[in-house]
Length: 370
Image 1 (tube, rainbow, N blue to C red):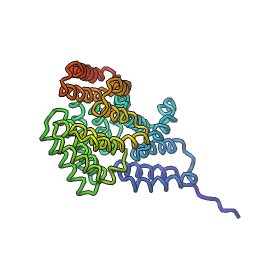
Image 2: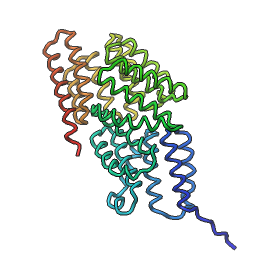
Image 3: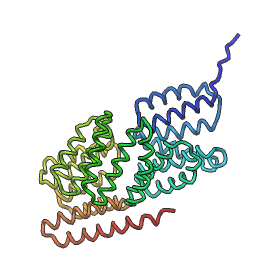
Image 4: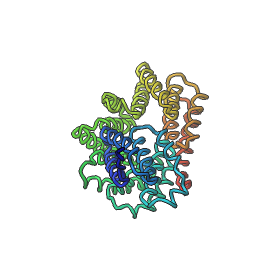
């Protein structure tokens, strides 16, 4: 007699998905990857259930964000039909859909669209019983508000997230990230000593918990804080420390450190070192199709190395097209000071004015929030 294979109850698979998502929120990449493999193997033997399949695709999109497979994450989310989602699923599934869409658009640097998705997710937040899930929401919202320089909104959400993460074990990674987010906002407020103290504290926790990825980000952010104060030697050392950490070098975030290191070497007049790091960064940026950093790397080359105003304008246009006004303001201020040192008052004045216009655009961004 042929043996009938018992199907795995879909409730059990749903429970596994919950455990998988909890591991993803802890940023445990190795464990989450292993859990995904087991879940995928179980699917052929599971009772058919479209809601659980949708839930898997949503959590998988979040997993792909964590592992920096942004394109695949977006593809999974784009397959979800809005109408079916609203009619046939519960509040939690809908909440995840809007939250993860926000996160995807954030990684795509479309910060206004990210916040619009977060606002829809927030309307369902009162149906979310898990405190850590609410903390995750506040953390993701805080970093999006930071990117459009809504400092006090960012700090408000970051504070809510930090208090919850600190109250639970196994969320040290998020405590570190929230601490760095506080520091980033302090940098924007030019509260330098507070920012430096917070970054150093975050790096200390990362070292104690063997979190190389966060340690690298900590040194990178510390370098940015020094660079903003024109403490260039200290900035250089911080970026070199970040790039000496394997977990940071293996991440797409290493482009940021290489770009900033090249920029600092140009400012210091160490042209050969600047070129070396720019070449490394450009190769990585080309590989992962990071057009924003390609534009930034070209900008510093045409500003410091081979002065070409037409090419400088072309790079600024790339950033303007993406509404990255904070980057535009930052680079225009840098160009203005560079030309001022060369006694080129025409170009210095031009780029100071460009920076002011870009900062006005940052203020107007909030009007795009629906």
